[in-house]
Length: 241
Image (tube, rainbow, N blue to C red; front, side):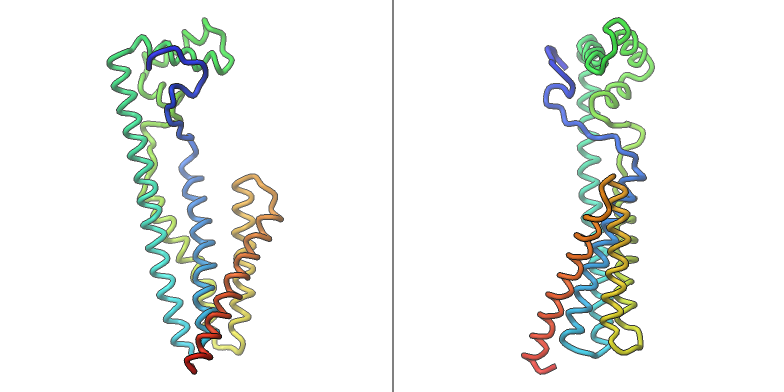
């Protein structure tokens, strides 16, 4: 890319963080489980507010699990596929520029390492050696944060989300259909415990304090169940279920 370039990142190029793919899948898994817990709990508690028939509650819960799992998987697949297409487009553009203006690209790579605190002479040697070894990989890593040999995998993210959502959704679903009295309260307790776990894990992944994450997670879950139970109760009363 043509100079001058003041500082990295250069010329408005999009920088994509080289985050370990396993952490991406784990993040998607935690979010998927959390969504499965809250959305399915909202559905089954809402239906329980309208009727005490176990079959109706179970049917609604299973439908929520299946629909939500495929929705999460589809959304994650589309999102990550778009990211992968963007990465491939950036790599193709970088390869074209390496083919048409190698000297400018070499200087650009040198400038990146100078910006990072390497002395100009050493930066020039590093850039030259990396370019000779694998020019595209060197520029993709330094400029874009992309590993050409390890692009994001949409199928892995989709399967992770589908599995995590399903596992999360099974917690309120199993709890609400237990053959005991006041199963809805057991469901609420199970949801609170599950949301505490996902809130703690998400806080640990982000390096944030666990307390606020737990309060937000549990608070939103309780609010969701309270609102849906109220709606279900009003509807059940209105139609005489």
